[in-house]
Amino acid sequence: MNLQSAFAAITFLLIGFIGFIAALSDQNYVDGDFLASAPPKMSPKPDEHTLEVLESFHAKMDKDRDGKVTPDELHNWLRYLQTKYIRDGMASRWKDLQLENGKLLWITYVNNRFRGWTHTEDTELELEGEDSLKEKAFNYKLALDRDRRRWKMADEDGDDKLDKNEYMLFAYPEVSAKMRHIIVDENMENLDMDGDDKLSLEEFLADYDKKELEHDYDETPTWLVGDKEHFLKRMDLDGSGFVEKHEMASWLTPDMDGMADTEVTFVFKKVDDDQDGYITVEEFMNHYDILMHTQVTNHGDAIKVHDEL
Image (cartoon, rainbow, N blue to C red):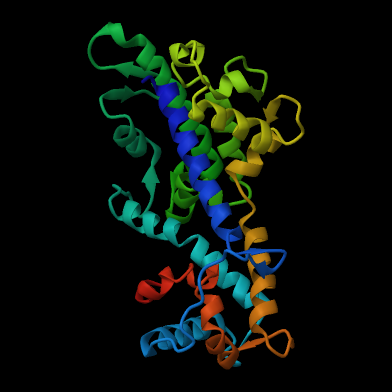
């Protein structure tokens, strides 16, 4: 598989992951109410450990320590959980980097990212070895140019070095509104074969072997039908036959704030018994069965890792 195909494969994995996150946020309710096939009812008497963890979550949300959680406090908690995987990954990656005075240098990043290549000031790549790999060198040059563009955008103070916060923008551009568009730009470049800045169905399917697509099947394979329907019904929002950047953005960079707001509305409708705009610890504990199936507890998983939150 060449580098372009590898980029495309990563893109499809990213699409699948984001689709999973979006589906997870919607799976239990529609228009603010549980689906008929939503999760089974849990015991009305949770174990003592679960109650203790839920109480600790309420305390962590309640930043002003007034004993009540506001919609904004719940929203901030949800956003915290949404980005926890990024923070965990960031902590692991940052401690393994070779830093100079607490910052990562561009040349250090390049030497580690593109092992086996030499780097010159004009950002040209030169293969150490045989000349027969020019196509590979060209693909790596494209990858280097993309990284350089992302680096400059993340480098907020313009010193060509990245501190920990800037490196997070570089490594996880989805966390920042100003960086999210670069995910769209990079994926469009990876998949847009004719350079018209939009994605056709043929380009979307281009990572498959041509023999697979042109084979005279007795019956169209399920995988091909599924991918075509996904493109036409979920990606091509205006039915033009192409996916443009604003459409690509809707499934590559979902509105995490909007997802959190939807969850806040749902939780307050179900848990705020007196509808006074606050959730007390008593209301929080009394609706354990609902909270265990929402993002407030990461659908129950946060109970297991509460010490890490």
